[in-house]
Length: 105
Image (tube, rainbow, N blue to C red; front, side, top):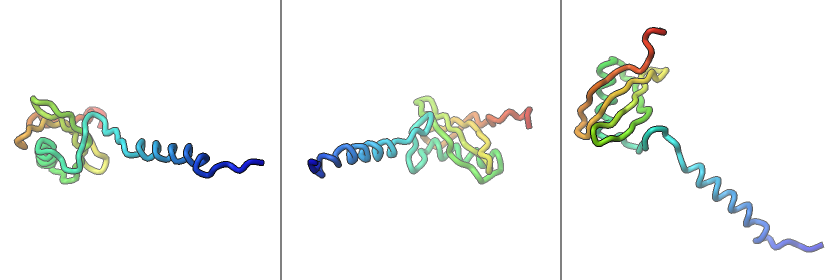
């Protein structure tokens, strides 16, 4: 019976662990990239959706950057009811609207 070289037998295991680690670092956030700090457009939408809904419990769900204005989806309340907002690079906003089908409530 031959003894296997320890370095040779560990290579496939280490390669698999390295690939698993790389895959775990990739996050699919949906329709846009998100950083740890919201952009001015995202901050503006979070601020203004809070004001329109009179609910301070808001969360950034997604955003899609555009030169014309960033579409920001904000979750409101414990159920994260979706609201849409257009945010601009100077922190101003427009077109704040609920994405919830109000007829089914």
